[in-house]
Length: 183
Image (tube, rainbow, N blue to C red; front, side, top):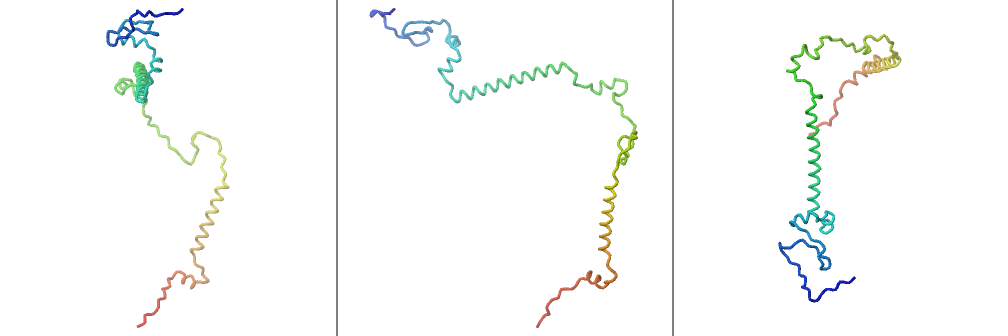
């Protein structure tokens, strides 16, 4: 099948302006027409086709990313608001105020005036009758070492009686020998 154009046919010149009907031509042959406003016509074009024909530049990509972040944040805030409204309906986590509790008979948790003395040398359980194993060898060893140290310090502090003059000389200060002045 071959189409032969007539040489007597009017030449095709697409008109520009607002009077143009939205007609799509294939090889000069009208194949699709759309009636309506230009904005309605643009809504019929798929987003993938628009993205392929007109790829976004860096500024548009940044703006689209900012819009996505904003939409996600608004969705999260909406979710939190719904949770808050649901929580306001339930008062399970809230206690009564003192004005409301004042009307109750007695205070809910009255103060106790019972004081138990604490003896730090005994086990925590006052009523316990269990025996606690206690190793005294460590305490005795520490006590012996402390006694030895005290005896050694006391020995060093006490002077010997045999060399009494020597001990006295050790504690006296000897003057510094200076040369004589010559005129």
